[in-house]
Amino acid sequence: MNAVVSKLNTKPLKERLTKEEWEQRVQLAACYRLAAAHRMTDLIHTHISARVPGPEHHFLINAYGLMFDEITASSLVKVDLEGNVLEDPTGYGINPAGYVIHSAIHAAREDVACVMHTHTRDGIAVSAQKNGLLPLSQHSMRFYNRIAYHDYEGVALDLEERERLVADMGSLSAMILRNHGLLTTGKTVREAFDNMYYLERACQAQIAAMSGGAELRLASAEVGEKVAKHFERPNRPSIGKDWDALLRMLDRQDQSYKQ
Image (cartoon, rainbow, N blue to C red; front, top):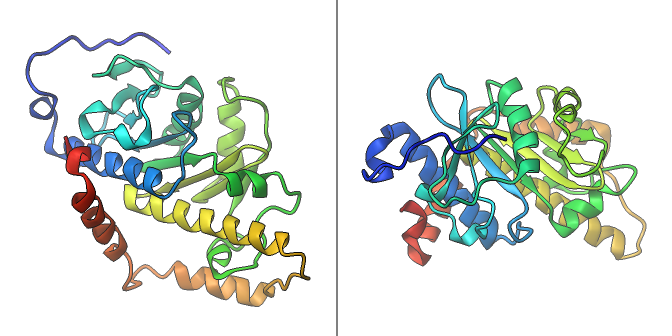
């Protein structure tokens, strides 16, 4: 990745950006705070990115040195697909592995506005299981036949891995990175978080069920497909209501993410 190319500017960041970019920053900062609130963090070492609205193919990602509950709209780092850092208010730069993973998807998937990657205990545990995600719960059946897998190749520092990661993901919105963690995407920040929240819950349920020692009951292929199609309905009445409620929760607790 190349050095910061933007110049210092005394004008406040918010005043230098389009309204659309600032709103995307607020949404992404909220997502980081929600990930922290739901214990989907690994200190400073995972990442959530969001495409900057417009034709430039820039994206926003966390500064490599901030905890998720510290991240604000103005602290997010803006980079291009070649790894040039265009805006870095903190001076911390970004996680190189985060650049590799997120730039791959943003370059290949015009339909994706947000990419979320986690290293949670249960997500890693399921990623290490040979059979992957099982149809054990309603949460897991959201992803029935709709989850990708990518084999572990080591810490994601090899730019050539991007081609293989994108090929494995295809057009899906959720992926298990073998022996590594979870990855979800969305057409909005809300959608990427929604996918990750329920993928994480599915992994939690799977590890809990398996640890109980009782024989497991898997849903049939017919039921798994039925549930997945239910959650694919474009006009489900719940869509969006949860995000508004989550933002209200953040606002009650700490509105600094909007700064």
